[in-house]
Length: 428
Ligand SMILES: *[C@@H]1O[C@H](CO)[C@@H](O)[C@H](O)[C@H]1NC(C)=O
Ligand SMILES: *[C@@H]1O[C@H](CO)[C@@H](O)[C@H](O)[C@H]1NC(C)=O
Ligand SMILES: *[C@@H]1O[C@H](CO)[C@@H](O)[C@H](O)[C@H]1NC(C)=O
Ligand SMILES: *[C@@H]1O[C@H](CO)[C@@H](O)[C@H](O)[C@H]1NC(C)=O
Ligand SMILES: CC(=O)N[C@H]1CO[C@H](CO)[C@@H](O)[C@@H]1O
Picture 1 (tube, rainbow, N blue to C red):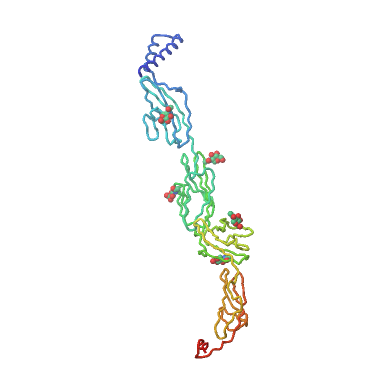
Picture 2 (picture 1 turned 180 degrees about the horizontal axis):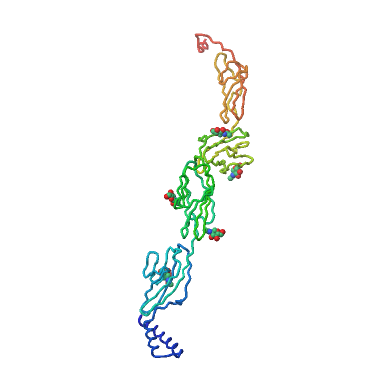
């Protein structure tokens, strides 16, 4: 099958060639013989490209260039490549890969790889060639894998600490890295100073950070593809401290109805923490919000205007800075004026010389204190009766007072016969 096909192909060529030779009218036996020879040892030919034309190819540095070279011929031609350096590639090397189909891949293309590449297809019948012109364009630098052109970044550092600021620049050819100090001094990597170092990898290191380092530091990465710039706005902080409530415990506050009340969530921390509040209905308020009912101050104080039963509930305050987050709970109850529930509603009769207790029970929030005013105006804080008159029970808390008046009548001691008993008296 295979030989048959080949034979057919050759036959077809013979016919074509005979036709063209006949037409050219320069027919000779010698020519005919050489044609026949040519046919049976046909040199490699490429499909489309005339070998005198160059194919242009433009590749970005660092990418892979693929140069195709397909050839047919009998016997099957061997393919090799000539590089711009005049080196010959007839089998794969570490950066030059010769594919089975004759194509050449050049990986990690460098600017030096630019130039003319020649593919040579050779069999005993002869050579055919194909020429490429490879252009390599530089890749402009990219800083930290993200920033191209000019990027501004804020960075914080703690006083007395050591700070490293990365400026890893990628690009081909490898970019040159330079840091511009706030005083306009240019430091090219690597640079080793006593307090400031620019590492080979572009990282700027500042030791023993001072408040005066609060300034702009600029990293410039440059190659012949272009340049990129990273502007670092360094801010020097005092020691970082996590947020801490001045009073770390959850609290319960009882507000006087209608009287402006504050919830105190004052907090320490560096940088100063942001404080936000969650109202009992679940809404979060950040600092500096003022409504007709609430004010959230920047100092961690929540002011509640005219508290009533609707404002009672759980308030949560949260404090956050870059090193921590804390929360605490403040339960707000709205106070209730005392209400005296149990007291004698009718005048009370006491027996002279015996003790008598008067009860006065009150509710209210917070729990009220009870005091009795005696008929002479003297105030007692525990009930003790020794005279008739009007006794006033007063219940008091910071939401208000309530009072009731109880009349006491004292009767004389009843007569009693000594050494006798009631039943015998009756029997008499
Ligand atoms: C040759 O082989 C390589 C690798 O398999 C492939 O990428 C390339 O496209 C091939 N070339 C042609 C012309 O088929
Ligand atoms: C750069 O090199 C320095 C010193 O070797 C090292 O401390 C730093 O982590 C390196 N930075 C990066 C981004 O690799
Ligand atoms: C809040 O509480 C802290 C500590 O408990 C106290 O120092 C501060 O004065 C209070 N602030 C107000 C406005 O009451
Ligand atoms: C919760 O209460 C606040 C203050 O009264 C109000 O602004 C907010 O809309 C309320 N949110 C909801 C979900 O009711
Ligand atoms: C590296 C990079 O992206 N450089 C670009 C900076 O901006 C100019 C135009 O403003 C572009 O031409 C560069 O390619």
